Amino acid sequence: YQRRVHGMVSIELLKLIIWQSVWDMVRDGLLPVSDFLTFVYKQVEAENEPLIFSLALDYTLDAINGFLPDQLKIQEASKIFDMLVAKIHSEKGVDNKRHLMKYVTEFAYTTKQRELLQSWLIKSGEPGLQLSRQIRYAII
Image (tube, rainbow, N blue to C red):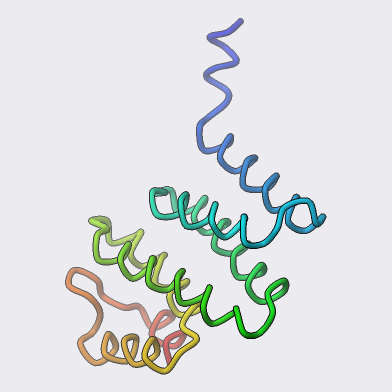
């Protein structure tokens, strides 16, 4: 029995359930947004599964835009932006880099961040990363 059940439950499924539960706690007011963002910083940095970090970053966008006062939005979005840029630099897989690029554009709140993205357009992306039209339009 244990062997059958073990084969049916993947680590990715467990991670998705945890992310959904943590996000539900934020929405229900049971977990402060600051604690959620700390969780995000620790988990997303180490995550390599696109589905999971996409879900986490979608929740993070909602948390920053919907639950933080204006004066904290730029500060927290900048932390995520910096983390994603570092992750893009360290990623070996082109697919993950492309996937992360979508979110880098979402968290680019400052002029300096937008200038970095613009430089990527001019240079046609980071080394080993060709920017698709879709990503180019997102940056513009």
